[in-house]
Length: 178
Image (cartoon, rainbow, N blue to C red; front, side):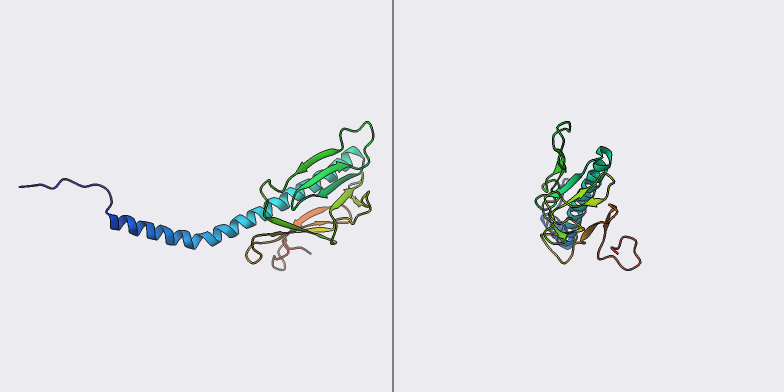
C-alpha cells in the first residue's frame, strides 16, 4: 500500500484567493490613507509655523528687540533680528524649509501679500521694517486635493497671542476659529 507523503504549503488557488482579498482590502483602504497623509502634512506645517511664530515672539521679549518671522516658500520660514546691533549675534535666529515634512502644503496669508510678522519687545505685532503688510492669519491646505483634507488656520491677535484653529469645526467646538 502506497502512502502519500504529508504535503505542507498552499495550493495555487489558495494563494490567488489570498492575493485577491489583499488587493481588495488595500483598494478600500488607500483613499483613507491618502487623506490621513494629507491631513498629517497640513498639521505638521501648521505646527511648525505656530512654533516658529511663538519662538519669534519669545525671542523678541527675551532680547528686548524686534524679531521678525518671515514665510519663505510654502510652509518654510525664517526668524531674524530686525536691525541688529554690532553686539548682536548673526542676524538669523532659526529657519525651516518646507521640505521638512510638509512639501505638499499651501499657505495663504491674510491680508493677501503679507509674508511676515514682526514682534516688538512686549511680544505684540508691530509694523514690518520694510513696510510690508503684517500677517493676521495663515490658512494651510493641501496642494494635492482640496475635498478631503482638513484645513488649519493660525491667527495672530493684536496682543501677540498666536492660536491654531480649525475653520471647518462645528459651532461650539473649542477648536473652531472665531
